[in-house]
Picture 1 (cartoon, rainbow, N blue to C red):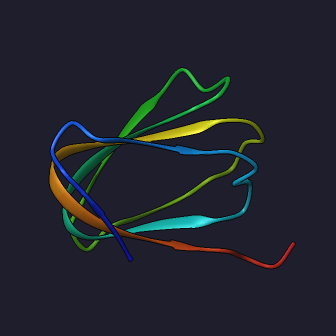
Picture 2: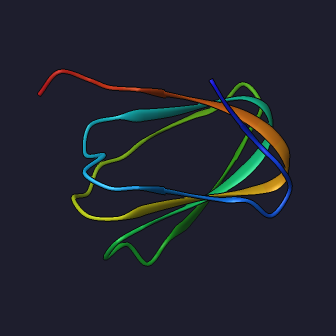
Picture 3: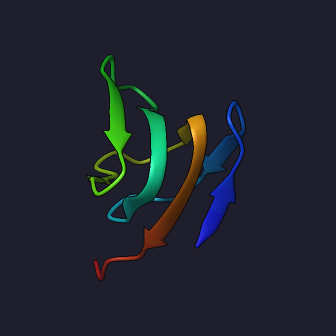
Length: 71
């Protein structure tokens, strides 16, 4: 589990296939070469579906879990 303070940025490299689960708070997720932005709130999850850098920004204090998936 990773605790994030509001405004904190987490860089995930080589995260293709991993899932980000939000246990508390709210995060904003952007992926390399994806024009969409994703807001994920507590109880939600997001699967990284692109290679390259993924940025996770805490919109308020948050707790997230990164789960690796088998290729």
